[in-house]
Image (cartoon, rainbow, N blue to C red):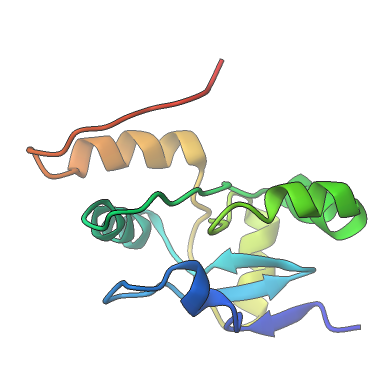
Length: 130
């Protein structure tokens, strides 16, 4: 059984049209981005300059496991363009495959850091949450 497959072959389709495409590593069927807060922030700014939407699912171990075991959930979440790694066990697996990451990309912390560092002329539209 192959658990890790470096550099997901579908990545150019997922985040095409960018100068600095973020690589991904497939973990149990979920292409996790090899990125940190700064790298993902830069990529989000690049995406904001394009005329399309990008949907991200900040994936933890539960998301990866559910995508592996539940076909309906995998189909549902296949609509997302990318999966930043939001869990240290995922970082450990990515690092075992050569990623060299230091920390997870925790969704709420990413949002705060991104909004603080976004270009001053940027506007934001937030949908969802509880």
